[in-house]
Length: 356
Ligand SMILES: *Cc1c(COP(=O)(O)O)cnc(C)c1O
Image 1 (cartoon, rainbow, N blue to C red):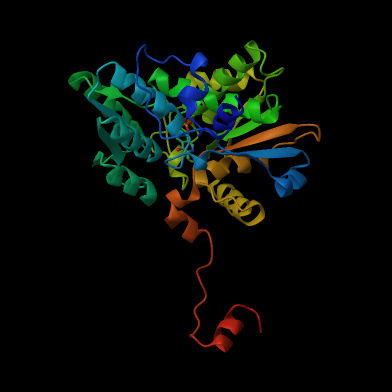
Image 2 (tube, rainbow, N blue to C red):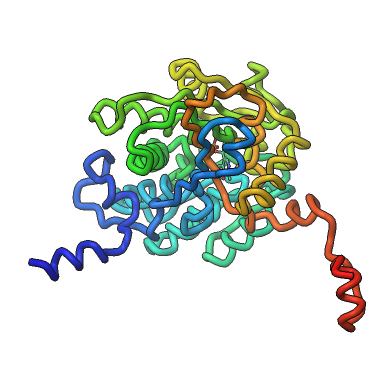
């Protein structure tokens, strides 16, 4: 008895499908496709809490197997695509969806085709998709053009479309809300997160409502979505033809889940706001230097948004840090001064390091 209990304790994290199977639409008889996604840390951020004047926690979604929250939805989307007999998956991507699609298709033995904008995909993400073995097609156009094209290709060639317009993606992504409820013991009172194609905020809202309906949580959070000023269609109320922001993961002018995001912010009593690239960079450096969290610029937009809000001391706030900073080393190196040069002798190093 005792040894089997110990084995259970030691059992590896099984990924989101085994962890939350009763709440997910898994195809009958499917073989679960997982890379061990989910189970990410929810870290208390002491300095950020002091700055904001409330309890602030960071959900570190960059700790997922391919370095972003996209793994949660991709696990379920690829599991079900394979169970339904698909041989290949296709997606449009600003980068992270392509990395996740390539990795999950690879482990499942399916082909992956990913269509990315020729310009502006962070280098780490492109490297991942290529190394995992996807067919990567770079187009002369933006994300919204890529999404339009893959919708048609999926239907013409009978491929499984694994963008967040695929309902399985949002179902998988809602597990992040379940985890936060499990980790905090209840839902937060306020959640702040970046918004691009708006699937993730739609998924979180569903997850929190389901957690409350089955009495895992006693309350619902206000959801605040954060867009970049140059790519803020939902805040403006109209499509942005040529979205611009250094936060490439949220450089989207025509979000597929626009309605879902509006419902999430309205029904939760939250809001959608836009922050400048300067504010994003400031939050990006602040997270690294005060909290030792290296996230993507798009993720830092959540904290830039939080710094704009008036928050009561009694609030429990969660910021969703959607992706890992190593995805985008070029932006990181532009955000700081470079290394200081010195000759190899100790005196020179001491002088340049500020020791003498
Ligand atoms: C995809 C992504 C987002 C935006 O999520 P949506 O569901 O498209 O709103 C934000 N940050 C990162 C790092 C992402 O990869």
